[in-house]
Image: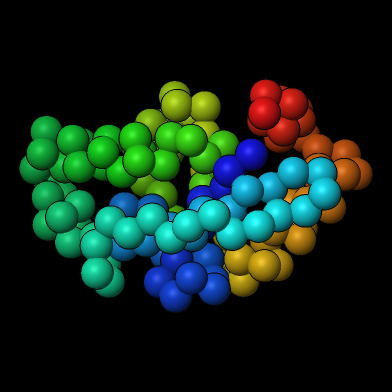
Amino acid sequence: MKIAFATTDGVNVDEHFGRAGMFSVYELNMEGYRFIELRKFAEGRDSEIENTKGLRVEHDEKVQKKVERLADCKIVYLTEIGGPSAARLIKKGMMPVKVKEIVSIEESLKSLLETIKKSPPPWLRKAVNSE
């Protein structure tokens, strides 16, 4: 399954979903994980989304485009996400995972792999089995 990480440096989960200019995408299975690609939405912060905040329709369209470009990922790690954006991800069958503090992508992947091997929660078991 594919997992996306909101990142500013390609190394850490350190960005809000909406303003993330890029996401590191990895493939994870029971044997391990590997880097697939860096999906860029902007250089630095995603100002297209930030600048349309408050412009309901235009903002919603920009957020939806980001969701669509990440739709092949089952899990999206991030530091923050607004309720409407989280609902969009969930509606697409994606699970937003909020980290409490900046954490390395590598650490997140190791922890997720360990959880999958030991006792995944129902939503994660379903995501793994749907691959």
